[in-house]
Length: 195
Image (cartoon, rainbow, N blue to C red):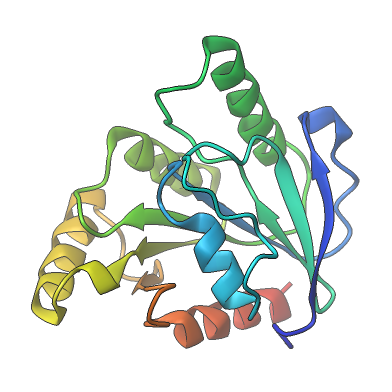
């Protein structure tokens, strides 16, 4: 799978607008300020394909990227406090509406900021993925902000907190330094090939 071969495809504001799913989809879910856009750009070898904002909660649509015949799906970041109730409701509808459809789920990448324990919304998302039987991986972001020893310590603590079975892929990454990005590409490639 050639990650260089990436382009923006479309953005959708409601789950009803989503096109029928005909190709493997790799979805990215996480809190508003988890570094999702930066990670996507790093994976796709691009600087600004996924819009990175200094204001969390900017992704208010589901964005699709064509990556060498598979779809990367950037879901709206959840849990940002400074948006209205109606906007939060729309995001929630978008995310739930997406997961409730019959789609070709190759992998859901659940992003968690390594600097803190998993927040209640992270735990909720991962419980949902587990209960739904969807193929998922937990990917810790912003590993460059910690020392190697802290990364190992936090990774172990978060894995324990989430009570992840051994077979759930679990990686620490840094979009800044590229840590873990090749491992994540390999994981995505295997998941897409398996579909």
